[in-house]
Length: 352
Image 1 (cartoon, rainbow, N blue to C red):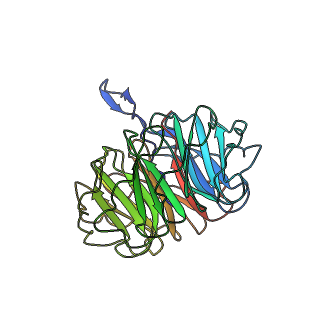
Image 2: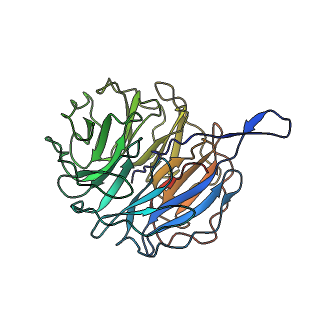
Image 3: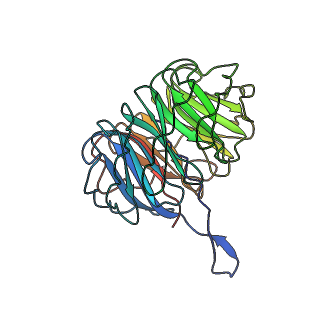
């Protein structure tokens, strides 16, 4: 499900290269994968150009079941997991490993937690979930505050994903029933829902994300064309034309690259991941990776420096990563310890 992935817009640090001129520093951070099977969350060191390191030790208190959502705070200090089983969301301090799980919120989400997002300033945390009101938002300060009041106009049913705009002034929710996506002004609470887009997504909104500059919003959804993108300026603009080559099946997750120049969709039919140039519209689809993901793409994320792309999938090895440079590079080796089952969500930490 949507990852949501893509919510981590950390700075890309520079260093001095051998020539004495500024050269890009490879991404060094971690990848978190939410999956079926205990421990439900697996986290790996990840270095651009090298790939997966040895899996970190499991948290001492595991999530309560299959993990459908994962998200790092934008400073990388906390890692959230949305899951089956009460309390439906678990958050851990993160510092080269899991800390002791934070106390559960006093008012828990009302169904399995699927889409997770921290606000850009780190002061709020949102969970899209399967039971009414379908979206729950809490103040966040190294722990849950008292849940904010529900929006006056609820999403229709079954929350699948949530995303704050890059400036934190809007909150989008993708969900099960028409109109499949809703966006609300956000200022320490929900404002009045924006009008629905004039052309709705076609089917359940499984993934939703804003472009890094906040001028576009993308929805991955169940039915053709499987991804819909709209201009955004305190409301939906006219939907952009569909890509000339559509994703091959249901869009499960969607992500923009950190520079906003590319967009990728994870989907449930081969080649399971599709990427396009993006510039106020879809460019010509990039060639498929030479080694395809092994099964349905459930979530997708670009690394914070844009040099790598990772997809969670429902078939072993459950997570696959590729170098990215205006197209897919050669697949990185699988992690030595795989996730324990179907991968549903994936997220990069900020660079360290």
